[in-house]
Image 1 (cartoon, rainbow, N blue to C red):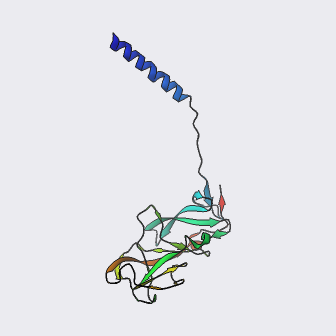
Image 2 (image 1 turned 90 degrees about the vertical axis):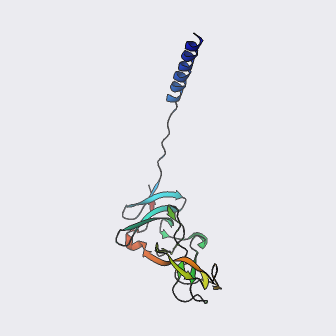
Image 3 (image 1 turned 180 degrees about the vertical axis):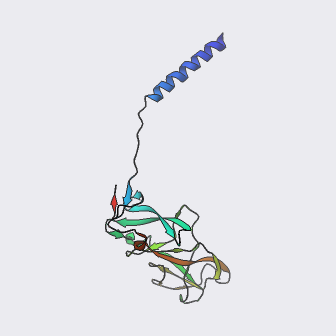
Amino acid sequence: MKKALLLAMAGLLVLSATKAYAKTPTVSVRMPFVYDSRNRRLGPLLGPDLVAVRIILGKGSEQRWFALHINPSGFFNPDNVFGLVELFYESDDCTGTPYMAPPSDSLIEQNFTLTSAGMLFFPSRSIVQKHAGSSAFSFDGKTPSGTCSPGGPDPSEMVNLSPVESIDLTQQGLAPPFTIK
């Protein structure tokens, strides 16, 4: 008898909780998206001036996501903080072929730089082992900006590096002005 009474009370409790939950209003939130001048959707707005954009590389065989800084008139790097990448060279004076640290394992690539003209510089997916004889920071992904530092992580050892690739986003159809809808 006690067992039946407890089961009945538990059933009432579940029923009343279900009714109370069913009356709770639901709220739907629509994420804003960024569109280019041709009204093509670039991606979701992640912050006041940050948009996630999927870039098709090569002949469409590879695609990667980048979090790009934009404003209505085009691309930019705020205070050049996000546009600074470290380049590595086999030479000890920052000359020769520049390399970058290999691509990140995150869903959105974080090791890249973007010029205001829309040139995106990023590490290739191919990884090579090289001696890093020197390194320098760069705003454009190809030219050292500032001091060249001799030695890399450990100049006596081989390190994993990636060749620098670039793509002109304006040739990909990402044409300002940009709008949010």
